Length: 534
Image (cartoon, rainbow, N blue to C red; front, side):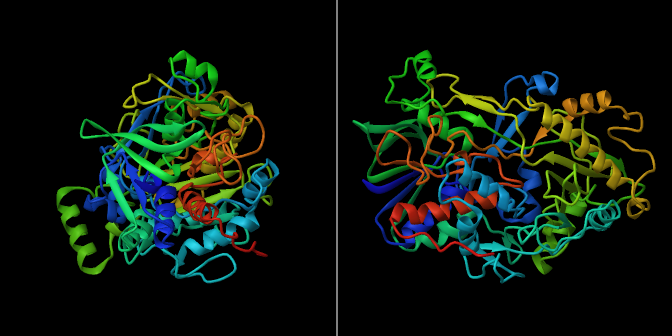
């Protein structure tokens, strides 16, 4: 018996579990389907590159995407304690003020920018900033990069030459600009939410973490959630929750578990012969994700990180990291990015451009073994909406995932403009010493909109940011209320990125941690932190 059972030990679940355990509100049990975060590559900044194809990620195959020429791209998600925060590029981005103010306008009362900023600050231990926007002394290490390649520096200069102002802080007063990413690292090591929150909380004696546990359904007595059934080592177990069951499996797994438990769209449940515990038509709907596509130039020499993973160089780089905490192993690879509005450069950004100092494409593309510079634009607030459905009643089966990429015409319009801006950056003087004059992708012949549209459809890939499938709000399609309680049942909450009404403008790990932080106060029934005047 536990007081709180949390299904999912990702970024939000880890932050929530850590806060509850340290607040001494009772026994907290975390059920994580993946293994412990013991792989040493997890904790090295550049290690995630080696993990992308590993079993520490789910490699969900999406449905056939009409917007991507019928391709079925992969949507990887973390499958290890710490979730995506254990295997991502450690980029620390919160989004824009308007993202959260939009949530509040859509019915997520209490989630405006002024109301969530204190929770971002409470979580943070920033090694450079201490101001109205940033905190120090929190669990989450946020640090400047110690390693930046010359090719990345060329990108930052080139973006300025293309008209984007330099920014020292994407998470301050304005997001607009180009600059170097801060990362969720501390002392040269990854600081995932599992490291930041779970490890210290284990010392309290209030926290138990069970890994390798696949949740199969939420258990109910009447309309009250009372526990979770799960499978571990091919055996079925149950853990009962005296106070609450909290789902933190993310935008793919949380709606799947709700539906397996009889909470979801009535037609979908009946189609699989699942008894309806409570009809909630919004479960699995409203799926949103960032889609990116590359502009690439090959390099004129061995610039960037091409070849740094050979046997000899790996040994040298690993030794340099161990002895001096420097060199390529210290890099998160995606060292810089830019935010720009491609309709009006003075307005708040609608495009993010990630820079990668290698040739980087999706796994379904032919590998290219050359040094290169890749700029990946993505539409920050896509209008396309997809869904997650059950494939079967077998909890081990992946759900049906249909992001419906580029199904809204404005997403393609902005994608074309974002790709053109990425090409413009790569053509600036600051890059001229590093890259060939001829563009590699989409290529010098790609000049008309039809060709660019076709190119985007052929190369588009996820940025690993699915959200929205258990939307927060107060209307009939909302799944949780602003306190994150599932509508129509008792003692059941959702605390992860699936509660986002709309996708935030940037990488989603920092907001997931904020959601866990804010939820911990809600569950404890204490007053929320005072809204910020920043």
